[in-house]
Image 1 (cartoon, protein in one colour):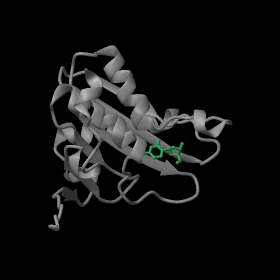
Image 2 (cartoon, helix red, strand yellow):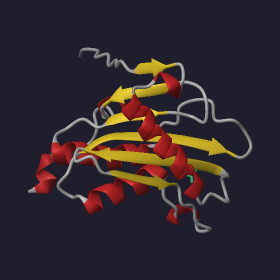
Image 3 (cartoon, rainbow, N blue to C red):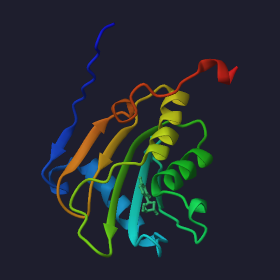
Image 4 (cartoon, rainbow, N blue to C red):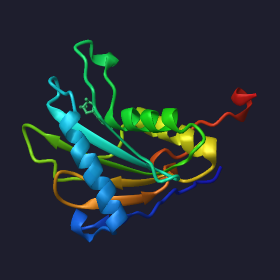
Length: 162
Ligand code: THU
């Protein structure tokens, strides 16, 4: 038996104003996407924006449903829009943010487990790392250089694709 320790490094910015222009602009697109959120049940409005390697942008917001499981998170709305429009183009970066009606979202919004799994699929498809920009309505912004730290030891059974 041996013990393995898994650590990862990520960048913490005090606020969005410290970001490089391209990253701040992508986070701004995610903030704009919040306005199209349909979240009458949670009253938590998430926006996501994707920059693809070919320079195209796609955004998405969470779409809830009165039959709760039928809804979808903002990240998957944005990612699926991107990859269904450009199936052969890798995703470069995803920015995520949120606002809530009942409180100030002052911490970075991190993708849920299902969204992590969905995003990792496209890292594996294209063999590239997808950068994440995680922000809140205010406060710090995290940048993570690839999905692996957010979904360590993720499922990848190569035989399934054969
Ligand atoms: N939500 C997202 O859009 N992305 C996440 O990564 C976590 C949660 C949405 C789902 C639901 O509409 C609301 O936020 C509250 O969970």
